[in-house]
Amino acid sequence: MRIDVLTLFPEMFESVLGYSILSRARTRNIVDIALSNIRDFAEGDYRKVDDKPYGGGAGMVMMPGPVFDCLEHVRGLSPDEGRVILLTPQGRRLDQPMVRSLSAEKRLILIAGRYEGFDERIRDGLGAEQVSIGDYVLSGGELPAMVVIDSVVRLLEGALGDEDSAKDDSFSEGLLEYPHYTRPEEFRGMKVPGILLSGNHGKIAQWRREQAVERTKRRRPDLLEEAD
Ligand code: 6GU
Image (cartoon, rainbow, N blue to C red; front, side):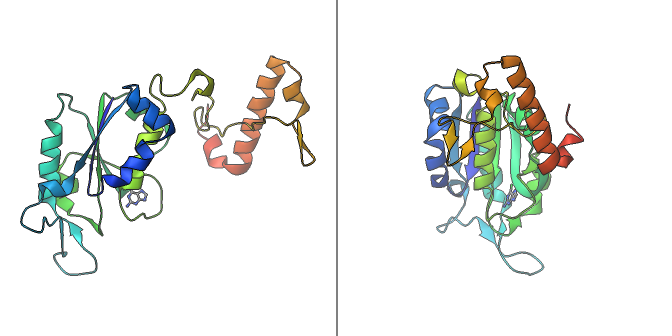
């Protein structure tokens, strides 16, 4: 998969992309992530990318020109059309089914914005899907773009080792994940459930399923209504 990111702060991505699963997926060529700086497409000595809102009001608005020009340039970097996603709190809320659908694409183009908002012509004219990562406000689209990248890349073939398969993850079947334990068998008076030490794989699978359902019922009853 190829992922292009359009941002005013490419440096913000370096640390997240440089560790663990994402770093390994990049070195194994499972994903190619390219960062483009929207400011490189701004005009004038000051390379201005934002301006005051028409009609007045607080804050600055992201100008359409640099974003359109940057996207046009980025489109030409690869022959694949790609699914274009604008990160905004006004978008459709990201969930695991959406992550799965994004992970099936050959190319994603993510646009992260800053300031009080985008000029509305960015939403209208870019043909981008609008995606939010939840009902709260962040200072920009960079962290949401990193959330999309992380959640998508870990589903790509070969991104996780065999031992840490994604199929049992929380939400993978619309349920929260069952509880995990490792050594020691007893820690500060808290014991590992006996069933996990029994060696009975059928019973263990059944117990984990029950725990997942029970935990989802208690913590996220909203998920159970949609689960298989
Ligand atoms: Cl995609 N952007 C910003 N600025 N805030 C958010 C968000 C996106 N998703 C949730 N909050």
